[in-house]
Length: 120
Image (cartoon, rainbow, N blue to C red; front, side, top):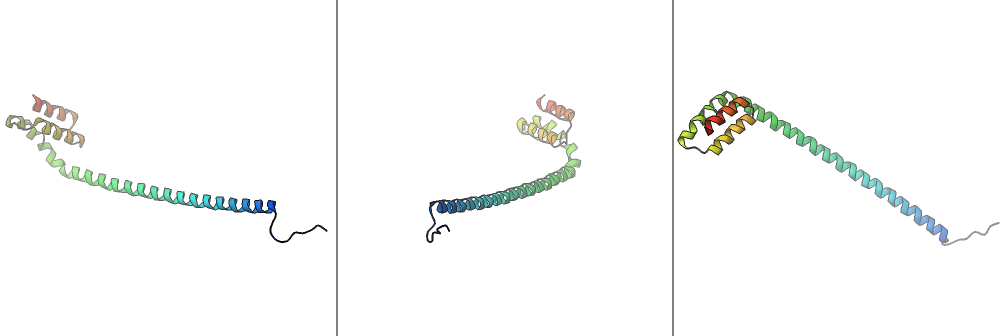
């Protein structure tokens, strides 16, 4: 019959126990880090979704404002044509025209004609 030792474990038993504890700690900390990373990713995706929804609402409001302002827009190009005679700032008038063109209220030809009147 083999001799059984009682009391403290031997060197191999201690090393084995330490390895098991260290491995378990690594597995637990890896799982916790993975869970935290998944939660952070989900929160980021939620923020991106909310930002996209807000941007869509802003775009819709801007389009609605442009649609409401559209009947007034045809009168706007006539006003800058008379402005240079009064000594109005050309840069400001050109910026207004560019803004109207960018909003889609002026076509390329209308923009070019209004700009020619301002500069000519």
